[in-house]
Image (cartoon, rainbow, N blue to C red):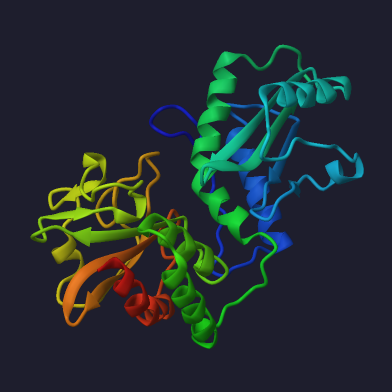
Length: 313
């Protein structure tokens, strides 16, 4: 299957909890290899994850582990290192090779290695397609890299006290909203499978909102790219009279701010942030996979909302 632009559509690694088991990874890997085979025919597909805690972990195929293949690791992955890796694979009997890095969260989060037994099979077109594939995989690998190696936790109610304590500590120590947004995502990562976190504050009216979590510093509302108008995202309609929203399968731009990299958040959950009954902002979480969130996640956001609101006001 291919997208409108001709590039293959990659399968989404599905998980409702914080961890990924070996069977889930293997099933996803086989689906990925199959989806890419038409546009990027290959006899070898190696996939590595770069966990947030460092190093590189082989996802598949398991046979590569026996070869003790060393791959470049962050933070310094240069074009020269990728070319050296490609040369090693050529010497191993695959004359056509592409090594390309997946970037997300402003850092390398994964590595794809394509090898083919036919000579001169990969040209500029195939390298371009491989690059498009890395962009498609970026949101998923951001989530995977943050959660790799973390202990599974499925009982959000039992963990809510721990999460609230960490959020309160982060809210007290963070210097600004962008740092707070990062810390919220970090704290929630073991418990909620999400790709993006957005902190927004309203303007003088609800006609405009500002993505304060992405604000680089300086006067607020100074970056027009961070201003979200009602025509782009109708916040009053999304929340209605309630304090939370859940969208199981949102259309592009329907329930989440448009992302700079074009990533579509199909699942959206949000909570209104209020101080003394006055709306001071909202916290929104998005995931590329539909049907990701339910009431347990909404309850957790309600718990942490007052802690975030006092720093957003």
